[in-house]
Length: 336
Image 1 (tube, rainbow, N blue to C red):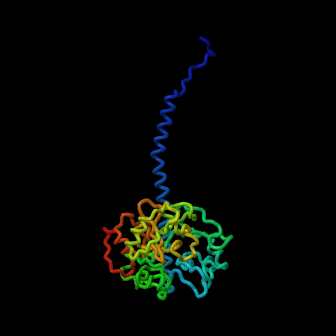
Image 2 (image 1 turned 180 degrees about the vertical axis):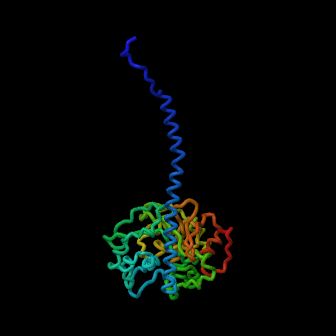
Image 3 (image 1 turned 120 degrees about the vertical axis):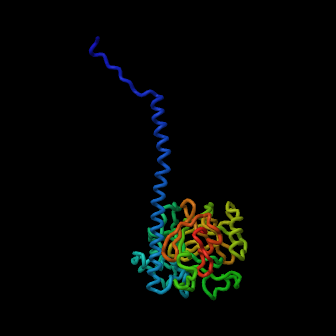
């Protein structure tokens, strides 16, 4: 026998290799959803923490000023009002940015565009994957930072700018706002007769695509061109809108800049249920709702500072009850 003869070495057959590859593929397919779910759970937890910060800042603001911050406040001779969130900055470890804002001017004034370009991480939900915010959204050459959170203006359809603003409340046809944050009135916690644990302060909204040449169902605000008189009218007319018709595009600059107090940037209404379509109607009737990229619903900061997850399946009457501060509605745990 030749002592130099090589020993027979047995390798993997092609079938064995294919079996191993198939097993690995199955394991990956089983593990990938779990990994994705864990990542989304972490993102949602961060989003909840952001909203808890907003609730804490709101209460600190109230303790100092004996009222909640006013939204969309226009100074005499200025243009583009400030958001509620701009006024909360000094109470959420963003005092440097807060001090850089000149509230005696408009939010689009040249002296304030630097502030509007500052990214506030606490204003961004990591679950949302937004489009790039274009340069020049506010003033040519300047950039704007976005926000995923909205302040509750209630169940009225009015884009209201004050008690004297009869044109925007349609000469009394549309009721004034009944939420917590809107123009010309600073709400106290004592005014929330429905109870702070039953009244929404903030919720979420995905950012838009910043172009009217394409359609993003949740990111765009659509323009049906109808004249709703009630929240039900607005909800049904918005649902019936043919959104793929670009002529029905309203605003796509949803969520930027965070300094600007407006329906497409920092406010939402309890007219349509969570994750329904958002619409704007003439003259100045608004049905911007809360939405998110979380599966099944939206996060909501209550007026007491707690955060709840509200499902898309919530009864519309319960959803609207959460939007009012003084409607006298009775909410049960089963209705949420």
